[in-house]
Amino acid sequence: MNTPDAILATLSEAALTALATAVEAGWLNAGSPDSAFASIAGKQGAAVSVWLDSLENAAFSPAQIARLLRSIVAGRHRDRILVPDLVVSGPEVPGVPTSDTYAVVQSLFQEAQNEIVLAGYAFHNGKLLFERLAEQKRLRPQLRIIFHVDVPRRAGDTTTSDAIILRYAEEFRNRHWPWEPFPEVYFDPRALHTDSHTRASLHAKVVVVDRMKLFLTSANFTEAAQQRNVEMGLLSHAAYLAEQVAAYFEGLRQSGYLMRLP
Image (cartoon, rainbow, N blue to C red; front, side):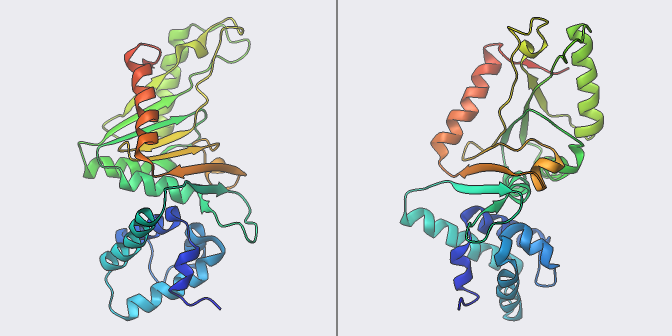
């Protein structure tokens, strides 16, 4: 039978990091509902609740608990070659340890200090997903937030490209980022070509934090994709990969392949 301490060994690094972030920020404590623990630790949620309760009873502060969790992650980094964590949204399957897409993304938003690069194909009611990132920007004004989005021309739409761009910009401000300051938002103008044979989509779904962590996922920035759909991704702590992805998007912007949304 697993002891409360041993249960941590079954959690992924992404789950441990998300747990540390949630405890330190005050979003999670021993009195939180089971669903809150399950969103981070899956079927091990109840055991993690017991573990957290034991530390709180021993007078551990949230900061101390978070430091302990992060030290476990750091120890894993020292002891082995970094391998990515599997991140999944959808029904749980016994015997397959995973981290939850929504919890991982929100944790990455909370960790961003200087730069966060995001790419997504579809957005729906993004203000519910990005509220924590907007708060992080308020706390850290130096944080650079760069979105890369798809501004599509629908089949049969003969509207001018400029009109489609302005319509999308208004939608993004109203539905996805209603706060100030407005982030940098870039799009691929090829998605607006009237010739379907030359049209192209910005279809990547990526989060890069401070060029240190990289999350590649099939999930779009929608509530369904983040929490209900069967979506899969990999969270990597390999800084060289995070740097490559961030540099690729930077190169696309600087070369003019991507244009900034007005």
